[in-house]
Image (tube, rainbow over all chains, first blue to last red; front, side, top):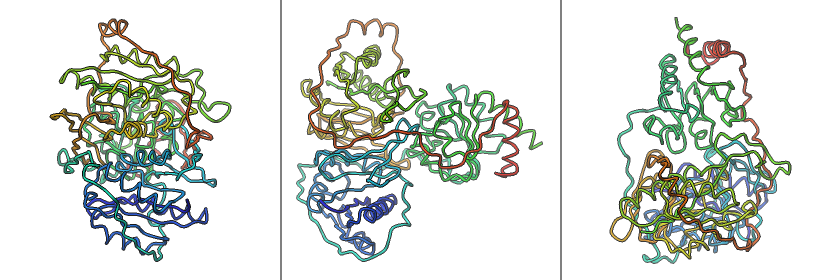
Length: 323
Length: 254
């Protein structure tokens, strides 16, 4: 058991962009530990992607090829990757924390009697893997204590894809043993519900509302503030889950990613799933009753107070300032 | 169809969290607990499947005595039976240890379908369901918005990134992890609360933790700030005035 193996994600020959963040994480961990870093890409007809990895600073690249791996299934990936990990025999397996990884990686780790350290936001000496608890209210240091390979998935934006180091790596084709009967799930085509009519990514100013608003009837005061500022109205997931605003106004890992000039968060605590969707905003203002709400960690200006008092006062002041 | 819903009891979302004196977990003394929200959606999906297809809904929860209040609530909402795995040492078990404990209890029930939330509000590892399926040798799918019974199997709608979805079909028995927002959650009715008192809650004791954990939580602490936040204080009108100054001269959106 030695070195690091990064599992890269692709669909139909296109990379998931988070794969290169995981690759950067793998390379940096390998430098820290003084061990080799290798990478694997899995699918059917992924030679071109493997060659692309051949130009990165890696000890080895595995192209894991099988006709049954054309479309993603948890079963296909777990069976194939179990064989790849056994062959490469790494001490660490690094993955991007994507929806797909969340679907198969816990089962893969289980096959080795290990537990995936998921959604990691930092790696310190040790190595210690940092992840968040209680929707971002606390950080936690995790350490691998098992004897098998250590599986780690990294949160979007934790490592920079452009930090991946170039180099030359040998590419090796790996053909796993895989039978049709081992794949129990039948995946369908990908689809979208309806054409998105709200493009929040282009909005210069966004006023976003979260759980703190309490009731659907209260959203009006936030709408008034958005109107006063000429802003798009957005929301965190619970608001859309409740049907108080349409899903297409959701910001976060399951909604839109935005980077406006101003993001004004009203009654949003700031769970990591929300923060990944808005932390690229130029200026963040947060209004929340809980001074320990994680939204304040990314806010430039913060107001600890009752949104039902602060928001109407702000709307009035904005309208007055605009004359 | 026999549906088993694995639920977790977690601190309420707006609870004031304090780090325990040993720095290894949170101070639990003054906390209020509730059902993990994604698990509430899993329960709702199970109750709706039962209403459409008939069968039985069994809720399962591991933890200390206090988790029985969450099980009672699930019974009041319409679950038929509850199983409490009595375990005071959840913090010392990792995901594999917890999933093993659940797997032992599930085997005796032999359900057609297991539902659970996609992740917990406290640890947020998002793995217990998948690991449980792996231990039981069942197919699974994660982050599910809708479930439909099709022939002798299931059709589930998976949420993917950036507004994409995918249907996945699989045979039974199977395990699905449920995303929030797929259904509207119901409240317990007075009648439901009354009926819950007559429903069975079986208590089983957890086996002693079999193995040393594969991962260990060493320390919890408040996150460092990523940005220097300027906190504005005063009456609402004063704060609003200060914010408008910032919006005009710093952010320049007015």
